Image 1 (tube, one colour):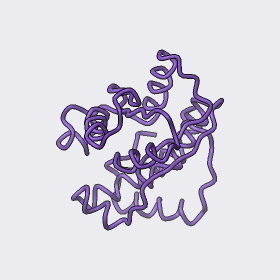
Image 2: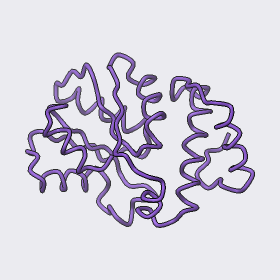
Image 3: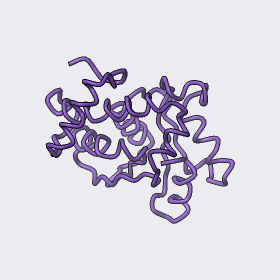
Length: 179
């Protein structure tokens, strides 16, 4: 979900505190040279979110680290979270949920994202093949991360697994992790 949507949800009172988490990634380094979390914080401040309602975690380079480092940051500030809302791109919601259930099982987890058509996401990223590679890589993580201890298992429909295998066979592999 975009940081603008995060601000809208904050203004609606859905959460009292916003934690922006993340360094840079291969797809965001050019747009956010200071890091994703810093860029999102700066934009939220420009939209009127008070600095006192924002925490920033700048080291995370993957979803597990986003969750673990945000959890540590909240604890260091004396915040005992009973529930969290994880906001991500639509295709990442299932994995974010499964990762949080594994790494932070005592909190209630809600996932959200801004509704986004695939064509709009391709336009935003600017590289159709990279977007498909990211989708394939995310599904691979849903499939293999439970056995690695990174996430809770989730049911993946057989037709989705078949499409995944077809896309891998077609060469959409740049975002796969080594098995």
